[in-house]
Length: 521
Image 1 (tube, rainbow, N blue to C red):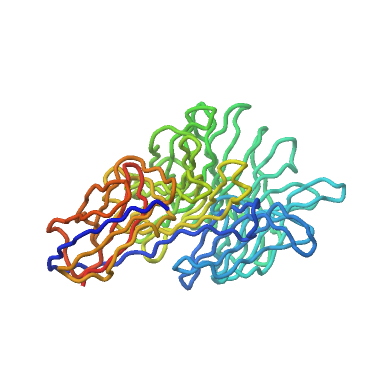
Image 2: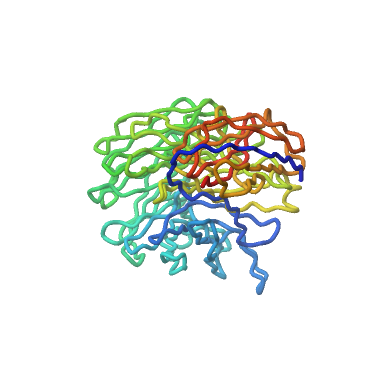
């Protein structure tokens, strides 16, 4: 380890500061526990008792039969402090199982969860086929049932499911069972998975449906991507009746292929759309959000955000209570590096903040990772899930693609107060241990020492600095520090108060690196 030690002499003045912050954490979960296997977190949901369920697709090797499964649907139960409590796998001796697309999980009326995905196996002729499936889990992540809901000996890929007000379920996806092109589908079932109706949608080209949600009157909204020519795809949103008939159909976009329209329904019934607006055939685009009138699909507003870059599609958008702000999540690429992105706007689409997240360890130093889903949490923060990836093939010899879960506060910070550090949008999520302060709590008028221990080989990007913020998110003190080893005295001004919670941050010119809380008595 590269050790950089500081003795920070703090003169503390009397005032009363108070406040509360959301619990934050970063975890990388490898349910299989063996090198070379992979896991991807596709959705995250809160339980009724303050815990979280992450739904993932994970490779699985049965140690008894030595059968290898390309994917098994896996439920990971996580407590409010980020401790993994249990891992539940959907094991079927004949099938691989897949948990759909981003935000593929819907909460049930009884507190359990339903995942829309598919099984994968060979048919009677030896052909590999998929069947859409509902994977049912209890509120603690225990697997209750798997129900295949599409015809046998045909290929149907499920992407997302929701429970309906009558206690049944709807699942959407795409199928090759109709004609030569892929068509979108919606299947409605009763409460135990018996099919009530199946409808397909689309044209002569491949069409995809990745999201479905309930309208307030028993109808449904579906979202995906419609191919309108051999070289172009557009956003696609439909309103469907309670029997699956099309009430309205909306396609829009530019001259280049757009992403999927990832839809959710707002509390007032409006349709929220997340994705990316394309500026080229090489995945170049800008983040995109829209709000549609539920009566006819017309725009209430639509916005693009950020600069043009590759792989920036927002995968999901959800409401934040009670403000009715919007939170969205997705990937972001910079050269060979991938980041998770969280983006908060007002209900009218005005940008509030956008933050990027990466991780760092001894094997993979450039933080290739991304988010697939995000959920507001009862403490006012957010929890996101996705994948932490190997960067090169050589990395897989020591490192696996793992499920990645990050919990932030309401400002998207790993340590409260990160938002006041000028010029820093990216946070390294897993270096919390490199920063230490003592004594903690610290008495008024006494000295506090600060130690920074950066990993060996860590490349500092520009000037290192230490920042103190108070419990109300206000800047108290900021000071540059050298990026060389040693211990130096640092004095603070008179802005630091006493009797409260404070947050110390270390950052460079580009990234928030670590943070720690301390208490002044």
